[in-house]
Amino acid sequence: MKQSIGFVGLGQMGQPMALNLLHAGFELRVFDVREERLTPLLEQGAQRAQRLEDVTEPGGIVVTMVPDDRTLLAVTLGEDGILRRIGQGGVHLSLSTVSPEVAAQLARVYGEQGSHYLVATVLGRPEVARAAQLSIFLSGHSGAKGRVLPLLQVLGTHIYDLGERVEVANIVKLGYNFLIATAIEAMGEAAALAEQCGADRAQFLRMLVESPLFKGAVYEGYGRMIGERDYSEARFPVAMGLKDVELVLRVAEHARVPLPYAEIVHEHLRAAQMSGPSHEDWSVLADFVMQAETGAAAAARAGR
Image 1: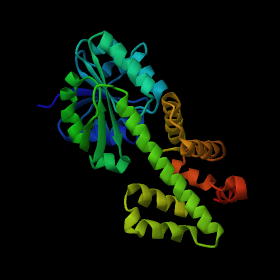
Image 2 (image 1 turned 45 degrees about the vertical axis):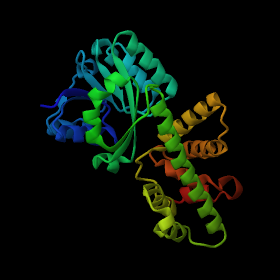
Image 3 (image 1 turned 90 degrees about the vertical axis):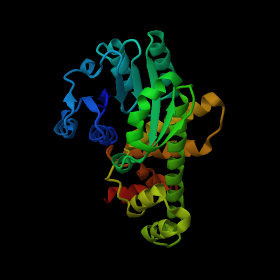
């Protein structure tokens, strides 16, 4: 019989991961502030946690998949948070992309009471989560990792142990998100150049992703969206992308590593957030590549 675990955060990534755990035989207690997200889990046999504190059993495992530092700190350190009930030997497994500082802070707080905070950031879009093919980056206390490996093996095909410094998994995930953002930026720049010189934007990007040199989810998925200027399928909204790029810049500043591409991407994501619908996918930043010079992106968005 598989163990019982708590799961907090059932959004686009959390929900398919929780469903995969249920299908693998784990018993789940689930919590999310949006009631409608619970329905698919409850229909598959999950137990509803009426309050946040009900998701945690003393000495047990709680998984969180939440959007940012503020939410993670609230569900962990709040009045009815996870820390209050998890007790000696309990494990909080965070799948969230948050700041390295918060990860280190929580690891210290848990360690002071004899429990553990582990980070297992994940790489993959929602369809990859549904297929249980995520890449997973695990860091934290080595003695606690054995307890979470069985559930991580359900969620992904590659699990990488990055050592005991708990914040390393967050830094690695931010690095990969930065690479995705720069690929989107580069596609936007190349498409803007081609379009300004008379080529068809959509055809240019379609030819790119059909080339063996550019196979893969990043170019194929985002290339289609950029070519068609269709950002309505927001698998990773602008606000989340901006949050991650700002975290990248903070880490880079602390490490004294210049990231000029990150500055450019940050500028375009800020422009996208200020002038476009908040629900659009972060690949909309490609529309802002040439905005300052030509105003073409702003006109295109206004006409949609």
